[in-house]
Image (cartoon, rainbow, N blue to C red; front, side):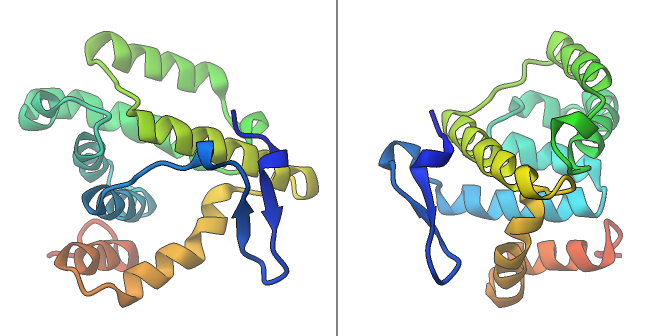
Length: 175
């Protein structure tokens, strides 16, 4: 699996990945969906994050299409995501609360971890562990922000334009 021996920091600040077993193919649609997901997460628009997670392959389509099921899943998902987004690593997360909520979601609705995302999580976990060694408040999402900001500000795709509005103005950006 991923470990710090698989990474080097280049003199110009870029990350050099030494193990190509850590690489995976992310489709253009998945790239857009990840950016949309982060924008919706930042805006705390958890109903929209549910649709994003369906698009990314985490939640079955039938949950997204059923308003009653959405009404149950979206708030639980919001609570879990809020807890995980805090930063500072696992010691800052209420593991018992998150675990119980994920267990409840999993009992009612099958949650899937797409193979490509399992690899991303393992890699981010290694990188965040390295960051936490020097900064107890470190969060990998903060390191992703410059890339996300660049994409949100320079990509002319209608999906990215909408994600930018959500990121800047919150979940009511369309209104």
